[in-house]
Each structure stands twice: as C-alpha cells, then as structure tokens.
Image (cartoon, rainbow, N blue to C red; front, side, top):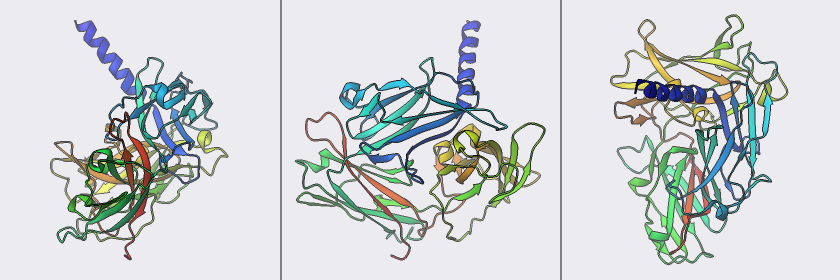
Length: 407
C-alpha cells in the first residue's frame, strides 16, 4: 500500500514540476497588438509556449466545442472540425544565445489538419505524450449574423457611482428566427478578455421586433478597478522602464527588481495607459523574440504598513492567465514591511496588478489598488443563439465598448 501511495505521489510531483516548466503561453490572432482570442470564424489564431526543459517533447493540441456556459457540447468532433480535433505540434525551435535554455512551440489554427467549421466557445488543451492535460485556453469564434451595440457609462447606483461602470447594450437580429428570446438567446459580458470577470444570466429589459435591449440594472455593473501597473524587460543586462536594479549571480538568469508599489487605501485615480493586463514578448538584443528573448527572475515588492489580515496577496495578469497559483504568491517580509514575490518571465512588456484572496478562496481585484469609475476598460458582449431543438450554441455576434470618462 505504501508503494502505491508513493508511486501516485511521485507521478503527481513529476506532473506538477513538469507543468511549471511551461511558460509564456499565448493564444492570439496574427495581427500585431491584438491580444483577444475572441475572433470571427475563420480567423487564424496562433498558440505558442516555451518548455524550459528544452528537450523537444511530443506535445499535442486538442480542441473541444463547448456550450455558452463552458460545458462540453453535444457535437461530435466531426460536426465542428474538418480534419482532426487532436494533432501533434510540429513547429519546435530551440532558444538561441540565452542564459535560460528552452524549446519554443507554436501551431496555427486553422491549419491543413484542423479547420473549425462552426462558431461557438472552444477549449484548447495541450497534452503530453501520456495524454495528460498540461494547460488549457479558451477561445471564441463568432459569426456576423446579428449586431450588438454597446455603451459603457458610469454607474447610476449612488452607493457605487465612483467605483463602478455600467454596460448597456442592444442585440439586433433581423435575419434570425427567434421564437422565444428568453430561452434561445444567451449573452455574456466579459471585461478585458478576463474570463474571471464576466456577467451571465442577463435578461432583456425591453423586447422589440428583432431586437432585444439590455438597459441599466444593478446587475449590469462592473467594478471599474484601476489601470494596470507595468514594466519593460526588453534589455536583459540594462535597466528599462520600472526596473530599478539588475543582478546576476554566476551563470544563472538575471534578476530584475521592479519599482516597488506602496499600498494606499486613500489612493485617487491617476490616468496611466495600459494594455488591460496583457503582455508582449520582445527583446532589443535579438532578431526573433520567440527564440532569442531570454528569461529573467522578476522581483515584485508591495509596501504596506501592516499585513492584510486573513488574506494572501498574489501577482496577477494575463502572463499567468489571470489565475491564482503558488508561483505568483507573495510573502510578507517583517524587516521591510513589504510583500515580496518572484516570477520567472520572458523578456517583454508586461501589465500586472496585485489581488488578495481570503480564506474562502475569493479573489478581490480591488482591495490593493482601489476601484474607480474613470478606469479605461474594454467590454465585449457575446451573443449566443440556440434555436428550439438546436444541438449547439452559435455565437452570432460580438459587440464591444470602452469606458469614456467624458461621457
């Protein structure tokens, strides 16, 4: 019995360690500075990631069609894919002239082996040679069978008007046959392409012929949050934006110390352009960032007068898919009265912020940096349509809107 338990533990440990070697995961369109995996049907998306083991393993991607609420749909793979829903990732290149060795993997979808034929929610999984899932990413393919108009404004709730934003929208569908909009139409509102910040189960406030209106209700409100912090590590040996110190010990990777952020519960909003939590891999010390950008250990510091009671602090951003993981957890240092954390990241421009997590594993995006109605956020409205008797949720349109403080 002890041998069985030990074997299971070793397998779990190996998989966990193995997963930690996968870095810099991106799923994006080919257009420059486009970070969204919510795209029209037929758009080429590229999945890329690095394996720090640098041993060119056999990885495969797998595509699953999902419902509007991210459950596995009833469609067979042959009904939404022309070709194969699972295939090997063949484009592999080794890093060049870097302190941290890695293998860079990439695959474009659609490709000659995989062509997606239907709109909807999709889950993309990457599996190792034992068919174990290493990570997943969501993407959405939509049609242009309807039109969604979106307006983002300051909240009208007197208690939160300085902290929240309201999303109102309409859905026009003159070319769709909708008999029961409440059952056949579902909408999801997503903030800054972060699937942890969505509104679902919204019902229309007005019904018109071939049009649904979703006017203001308290349920349409989002916390505004704050603009993301940022740093640029495009130079591995020299300081760049918000990098205050650089060290290297022996032949290890460089250590970059990011300008500390000081917690202030009375902080006021300050405009600071950002890319809504995203990141861009880049280096000015090579020609191909995919294989010539190096890795550096990034040191984050959050100055506080006292530690947060019964709450942990995490570094948060698209670099880790807006997830709470041990790798991005910060620890309080009594000597400096600060939370400190380190994350190994590839050279580039990064947005990030700090969040707290309580004992119930609830994430608070606003406790450290505040929430303001002026914050520039982008909202997308995804409209799903499944007619009576239909087998899957089509995404018939996506509308988008950004907050404008001048409104």
